[in-house]
Length: 286
Image 1 (cartoon, rainbow, N blue to C red):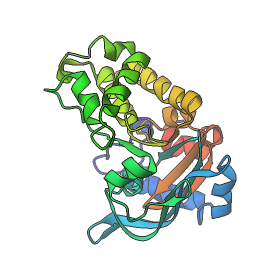
Image 2: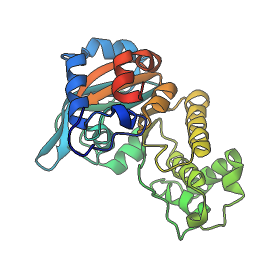
Image 3: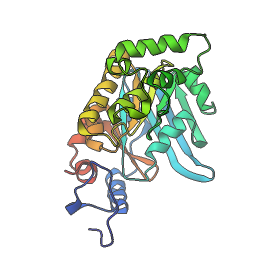
């Protein structure tokens, strides 16, 4: 039990009466995991050919290394959720996959193409990787339609962004009804839908989603996960997410990874990690 002022755990971690400090969670997770899963175990969780394959990734920002040899593999149409204590490097995995972080070593491939040194714009336009940011990233003074059109700024063919925007409106009537309204007046759930939809304008194969439930009311959280599930099932999107609500993330995901201190500590089917008593004790409030 922590003796000083308790650090705030991830939502979905332990209740306050039994809360462990971040350091205590990391120590317990490392002890539980030992050396972490072998590469072969990760490949066994992948269904079909990998849609995204990260091998031996060392990455961070400037000279600060956050990730120390992380592997990640997910197949087409699979979903993978990263959980772990605050500061474990979960968002840095997404940043590196999209090109926002500095890669010191390792390889990142999307489909058959290596993208390790590609700029984010080329990963989006050429390799089909899109990133849904954690923070509120809509342009509040632009209309819903204008926000969606911004998502297609890299499309080469004239009119392609407008056609893609109309497809979004055909799919999501709630956005279509608000197409001429300023994005700043949308509800939290509608803004999250707009962010996801804007990422779809380029028709990516892989969606990197950072904290989809953050700041949302429970009814909007369910809506967002239903949208992501539909994109996975109906459109075959591969979804790699970081989720503060570890229980919700693992319920959604085919594959769950536990990241601790920049290293992969555990991996398994999302349902299996949900049932693991130690994962529950450390991250799920069980």
